[in-house]
Length: 102
Ligand SMILES: [Zn+2]
Figure 1 (cartoon, protein in one colour):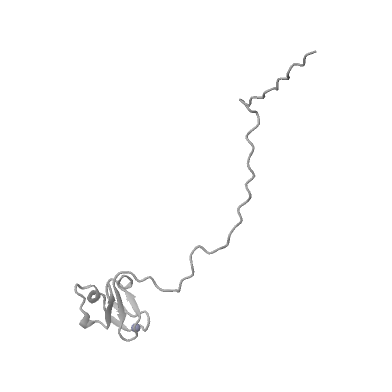
Figure 2 (cartoon, rainbow, N blue to C red):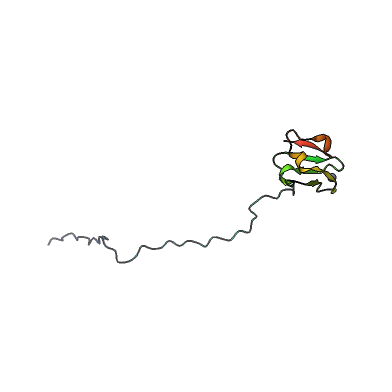
């Protein structure tokens, strides 16, 4: 009496009827972390910056009006004419501000 070896039945998954199992993705926890680091509230002064002679407040040339009087944001002093600030070179003798940095 001979025992024939059993052939395993191979199931070929050439055309699986079932969709592939969806991996369980845990819901991402909502993080309430602030995106930007806390910085001291300093105005972003770029380009040419002037300083008010009476009070020392800084004012960027970009924040000045294009024409007319330029007033200090700190003490409201009239610093001069916008045309004088924007002249090349600036007519500093007519301004109540000094060039802080370029
Ligand atoms: Zn001022």
